[in-house]
Structure formats: structure tokens, C-alpha cells
Image (cartoon, rainbow, N blue to C red; front, side):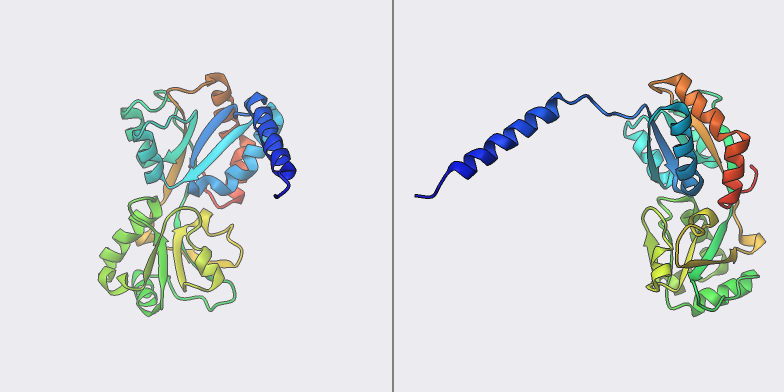
Length: 257
């Protein structure tokens, strides 16, 4: 017969650890922040600073604005929310935020990226961009149903009259930095908001879309209607709209709102 002692010891240890886990105090964050992905580069730095200054903890979740709106519609209730200015009216109309709490953080345009070291294509004019897209072996941009830049770029392709021509060579991004496959060399061209191109190691910003095809998006911070700690939420809002935060936003590719 096999020795059952090791099995009994394992079960006793597992039961003990489970009991200890149940007795531990909750480590829930003091604030839950939902943020559009475009604001992630400056926010990752600023959140650390705010936590150190306030001695409070923040749980931050990044997603495209369309995803955040769906999560709000499904009952999600963050304490603080960062969305595009276009979404502010909907958030306020549906009483998901404190009325009048929206404050602008910064603005950003849409750009084109290639793998670092690749030759830079001509995107200086609408026609040049059109020819570059037609010549590219593959392109990627955010799913129009999920993100601001994807929705806009889908309209750009329609405006250029090449939506169907490039469809078979297009990979739609889901969340996060959609130009990461470009940095790896898997896809030739990536289109996303400039603040989501600059942080990606191995990707190079070619430049912004031509002015007539450009979309400048302003992002705003709002306090959730059901914020668990309104004073702390207000303190975070004040910090992120202050001079120090403005400098970080500029450094990460944003312009003044």
C-alpha cells in the first residue's frame, strides 16, 4: 500500500493556507479609475506620483472609449473616468458622472507608424497617404466599434475611396497599443493616436495624418456619479489638471486642450 502521509500533509497545508487567505483583510484600492487607452502613457507616470503623494491606492483599467461606454451601460461604476470629449455628453446624459465635473486634460491627433529602421513612406497629402496605403502589404488600426482612432480612420479610408481595396490586408486592433505588431515586423503600417504610438518600442512615428484628414481628440476627466470617496476623486482630478500633470501630458505627445 502506498504511503498516504504525504497526501494528508498536502491536504492539511492546503486547508491551512485557504483559512489564512480568508482571514486576511481586503486590499481593495481606494479609487477605481477607468481611462481611455490614449491617456495611458502619461497616466502610468502620474498615477504613481499621486499614490506616493496621497498615500492612497488606485486601481486603473485602460480600454478604448467604446468599450468603457459599454461597460458603463452594463452597470460598471468607476470612481473616476477619462473619456474623449465626444463621449462626455453621453456620460452626463445617462447620469454616469457628477454633473459639470468634466475637465479637459489634453488633445492628441492620429498618426502613422512603421517598424523602426524601415523607410518612411510619404503621408504628407491625402493622395500620398492613399498611395502609401494601397502599396502597403498590410495595415492595422483599432476596431472602429471600440476606439476613437479606429472609427475615424475607417471614415478616412472611405473618404479616400480605398476601404474595399485594403480590407483584405487589414488587421483590426482590439485593445492596447495596436502598433505592437508593426514594431515586431508582422504588419507594415499602423494607424493609431500618436500618444499610443510613441511608447511602443520598435515602432517609429512617421507623422500625423494630413491636416484635411486629421482628427484631434480631447480627453476629459470626470468624477463618477457613485464615487465611493468623492473628496479623493476630486483630489485626483485636481492633480491631473494641474501644472505638473500638464507637463507630463505634453511630454507624452498631448497638446493643450
